Length: 306
Image: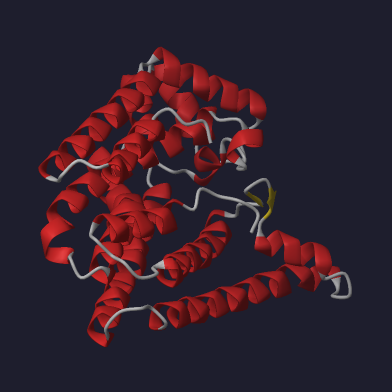
């Protein structure tokens, strides 16, 4: 309840309405938000994040409250309780999907989309990125990172919720092609902007610790582009600090390298190109005020600072 964009639930509701849905899609949209809460709880543990939406992550919150547990056992119990909480979130989301106002066949189709796009494919993308975290910068490939990005963000945040919305409305066949292309491009831009904010953002606005992606060794397009165009001295520095608990002065130096090599400008331009392609995909659909919301959202994505 601390905050967040709620973009996945919003996209589900909007797609449902655009496709002519006339009943309530709130339970399904809420279920998608619980999928997200379930996954970011796991993500925070995997990335060792301590802040989410400006407050302590669930695992950290448990550590602070388990004062009766011996100090040397507190971290273990906090992680275990967080995993249990994740399991509960998983069960609650399926209850919401089961209560959807649609046919049983549509419910099964929605659950299939959740299990494949939101869970299975996201897990595959996570694995790609986590394995890349341990690769050296010289061995990491932009193509591999982009593959993981499309699975973890484009499909998970955009394509999946949009397809679930039109499936709930019974109009998947008519809208799927345009929404899939829109979602893949705008979702890619969304993650590129997230990666930029992960290095250049303001913690007070993003609610996340700046520099954590670098500390985890995440081989973002921003980082890879900087490394390819860096001087020998800059490359040595990046190899030394990426994947470590870099200091604030190290972070400032990384930011300087990303600017001087044109990596920041490159990532921003790539994000804008994907937004333009996503908006173009909507041209095949009848223009309405609700469709304009998808255009506005795409344009906002590359301008946001949170």
